[in-house]
Image 1 (cartoon, rainbow, N blue to C red):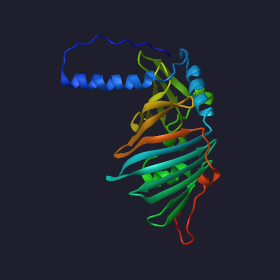
Image 2: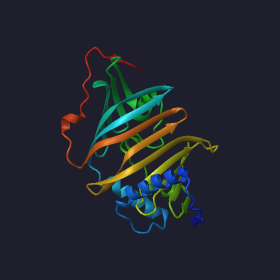
Image 3: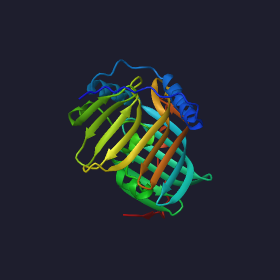
Image 4: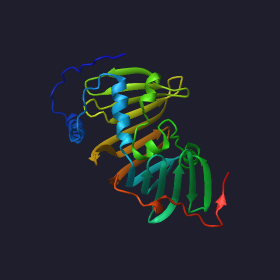
Length: 265
């Protein structure tokens, strides 16, 4: 189902709040305008093909970012370094005040995680381990996609599309899955993801992800700012630097754990 929506005209009254809004909006538009435009996206299949092809061309990635977390009312800021190698190798290192607090290595659907401050070690399904540590469930987005700013979509998602709506300023696609429904909003000119919302089968909003400040690197458009909100918990990631398809040494994908580590079940 495709619908068109038009916006009406607005008064040009010079109110401070309106001026601030327009400045922010124009900044977002300028950021997206630097991205290459795609061919008209007239069908859901077109959108899935364009979005999935970007992930296909991403082979290696190195990201340095600031992270701001609020879990169960406790705030923590730090610096995160991520290394990724296609198809499924992901290394995460987090430091707070130059001291390592977390190291994690994911391969396939499994993740091993070491907490340096408590000398604890955990291993298991990636979503379960990260949910235990962060209080945020990344399962609907995919762990790799949520951390790196990617989109979990492929042509295989086509049979699960419940709605596809075109607006003047966005494309909205609804993916119906057994445990939740995802509503993804894309920029219509560049087909980059702006927001993703996850709803329970009863229609309750359970998670929200916002992506912004897109930049083109090695031909791939990726966000520099990512935020995930679930209830009172929140994770914000602001990219400081990113290297795309520039090569990541094999030693980066090693997890060093002391012999006296305390293993948690």
